[in-house]
Image (cartoon, rainbow over all chains, first blue to last red; front, side):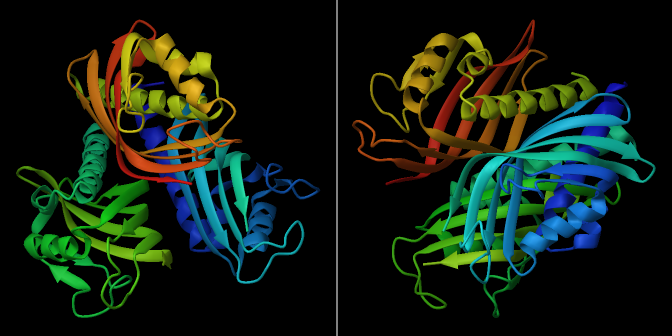
Length: 148
Length: 148
Length: 148
């Protein structure tokens, strides 16, 4: 792969993830879901072990995550992306992350808690589709989680 | 616009904003003001509604922000820039941000408070001048603000 | 230096530092030490004034830092890198940083404390070796440190 194409693709994937963070914190769920491949998978077993921890399909991913976050105030930040091209149409990446979620009411089990401050990594793959790069898979691992 | 020129301009704008953060936290006000176009605008109505919330001119921007922060200890961080070139000489960008300000004494109204921890976005435009890229406009929106 | 080579080298140095953060927080000390030049220097006098504050040699750097952090839970994040190429084989950079360290037991002097939350900058140089870019020198300065 040409090095300019590679650098350009890496920048596009960084913008894709930037948009992911903007849409999740502005609660633009339709726009957020459209950042994933239609058959994408999300694995947040580190946070929410149980039947919902691995979700498949962009629509179900958006429905699951909005189910946790609607009504809450959230901040999600991503750091130091390490993106590797696997082919012209496939890439993978690791992002350090930090999030803050403040719910208006104590959450249901595994709560009750009103505030989550967490740190970890997103392990992701990306696919270049007709409209541009999309998230193909996302797995969240945690370094530290503070609940109160 | 050539793709190498575009990638290079994006990297230069990221460095400009990196310098913005270094100078504000090291309180290098002259260097910080020089990162703005002479006729730049800053809109921080989200933080400070009132007559000072929109400021025009690099000198007045530096005077206004240093007025809030001189004597305080501050940390300003920017994340996941999404920079778009509008022409060879114009660009716009969104940055996620986080800031921490600790004043030595309780602030005047709208205080009193001694500690601000905040999260939000910078919505910016940039202009390429003879000496390089400068910030043309900056608007700060907030996701969450904690004052104590 | 060719601009594509420059952009590519900058991206490689960003990946090097991303790996630095991944390895330190996953406590992969061998991999972490291998990110430094064999004769690298680390200066953390801002945090730990004393005879150990300046350390030379990749092995001693890894031994010193792992000595502080083994058994602790840590999060280290880097922001807004400003990388400058000095030649095809030499570069320097500044990174804003934030770290969180939680020890299972109160630390020995200069403690006792169990939690460190800090903010500052890494001032670094890099060298391109046969296997790729490595950290040649690292100096940590602090903006703010909270110990409890």
